[in-house]
Length: 339
Length: 256
Image 1 (cartoon, rainbow over the protein chains, first blue to last red):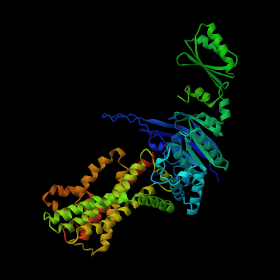
Image 2: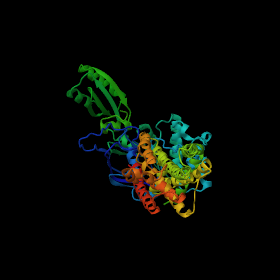
Image 3: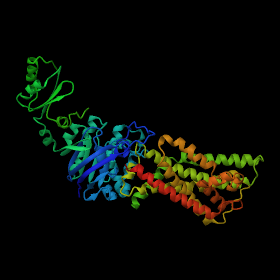
Image 4: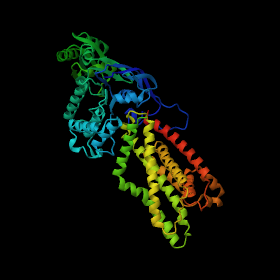
């Protein structure tokens, strides 16, 4: 029986640097202990996340680094205790019925957390043993997964010497070892070469076709667009948009985004840009720039250039984006996902 | 508790221990046996120490080997596995309460400490003989003391391993383990501190004192030693304390 995922008003506030379990390892806030009594800095990682992910769905959390994606996965996989709110996997409350939840889920963390004392095959076999698989079954599944993930050659070597990509593949194989109903993948394609990424996408789709739920996080729009049936865009611990990739892209006014930068500009000039046909919205940006949300792209550029010429304003830079999730993120936050 | 998962984790630890068996043997026995050789053979043989010192030393060396092994076997992997690589994550995600992951570490450490303690006796005996006067006339009491010492070492390892950061391992040894060994009545009986009354009282907060004295009481009762009742009460108390602290720290590290 496949299981869905639900969360209700999840909040998580850290009083120190987000710990490793939240996937935030690798950086620390340069916070010195001072002698005076200062309140501990509060870091709001999740600020009321409510989600309803259907069983059998590939769902994606898209957002920049630090948006709260990993913390959400941490809460859903019993590794992070929420400050407030609730989460369920299937019918099980994640915090109160941890063992039942852990049986249903497979988790691929952001960084490979393999057992460095074991060989690749042992990692899979012991993982199967933790989940009570019979000796025959775990050996059989381990061999099949090693083959599927192209790791058979190195199966009996200690994983410490593996490359990053190999470790990542093994992490994913391990998460699938006990055939979980819900698979969590936190930034699964980070550090993978394009070929391996395509293999991974294919494996995720195939896993999903067998009726399993997949939740993946990414800051890569192409990945979200290519893989997900629905996605939520997360920023500063909040969901700022939710829907299918097509719906979300269509929700950007016009769809196209023309980013321009001038020598200088004025409110009057921006109004004239707004009056161009097909332009839905004009937003002033930093450094005398403007974002034009419009239902056309290239054909707009010459008109913008003509207007600038007529107003004796220098046109410094033009960039056209076709309808994309990036445009959506920019429209909601004023920032680029890539920044 | 999930019996299958628990046993699988024990099997995993056994596999890793077997893989590192040579290093493990050197680490466990080299230092104690060098000590046995220098103090038990060289010092006694040259007349600087009385021959009876051989018998007095052996239980202390056994306590030292057990405690060293147990602490090392639990603390070092935990410190490593909770670090940046989060190697322990896979076991934390196994379908059982995470406290059992910690308890499995304690069981594995206890078994290793017992093995170390039982193996060091024949080694040391071979190095010291003749003139070692062990009398195992209360085997059950000896077994209970040995078990309590092994559990203490593993629980101590849990508490330390979950409280110390990787960068502070050196500090842990010089600040905690070394003083514990030197003031742990391993190389001398507690009664030998009679000339230093303040210190004699102070060292009673050191659990290794009860481990050494307990083994002395059951292996070489001819020497002065603390009462077995005191040893049992103290070791049980320390075990409960370290297990409680260890589990709490483990949860803090495991869940954010």
